[in-house]
Image (tube, rainbow, N blue to C red; front, top):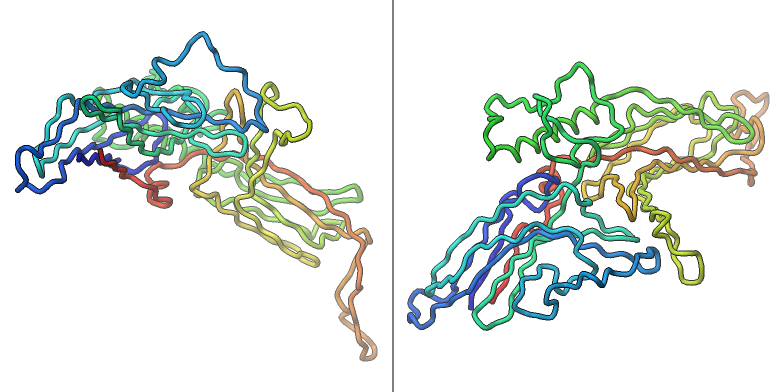
Length: 408
């Protein structure tokens, strides 16, 4: 019997383009007092990162698989296929790396091996939606002589920055093709670059951490810009109020803060609600034709909600937290994910509605509010952008398993 333990030194959350480091420890758990005949041997061990894609058959119409490129020995139990037995199809993988060959361990003996690999930047982020799922895993395969391969899978969460190419301070491409920020304006008079004076630009071993730090600087610059945006809200009968928000680009873990001014409106607002939602939309060429048993191609998930009764309220505000466990906006050939604020308003049909007793009455009287008020409802959607944040912060705030083990 041999125990194999894989431990991620920094947690299970990574930014695309970062280097994943994992320590694989192989142990013979028998006590050292056991005889030498109790030594255990492994023929080899190899590791590989891969991304599995799975689509809902009721929502997504995928093209038939390409039969001209069959899988290499799919039924053989002695071929290292990291995605063996997984749902869906493998859409992205790194080259496999051999950890060791012909390993023999005496009772109580243990050996550790380091695995390092840069996460690909051209793949989608980790996402579990209603239409599609993108799941990243580090798979370690071990085999005894004349025995099937045993697979140890370590779940990963990958955050991706979509957009243009990051460039170094000298104007050279930094090599993270998906790590820029698209449609986001940066300060023109502020140098967005790592601020550590101890960072060695020419050291290739520091390149991955440099890229991660550069991406963090760009994220900070993109989401720290504040400018008041005002929106007039009205229905078919007049103005309801004015909504104000100070920025439209956020990071995971931030709060979306907005203000609502109802004192300027000519239509009485009785109640409003605002929801922080994601919209998952299947691209038109992959949508199922509408019919019996076909799910809609657009689905919404509410992450936070605020509701308030606001008659005779002049000004109010709300704060909606963006969960660290959620997925930033992204777009692939099959699906897109966007964020929005979804408002719902309940307004009165009666002009000049007053539901408070008069302040001055000549004689004592009993006042009761109306039992029924005719109302109208309408909704409004405001798109916002949500970007990733520091992977270390996500790992600390929403911890996941960093260690996986298996017994062979």
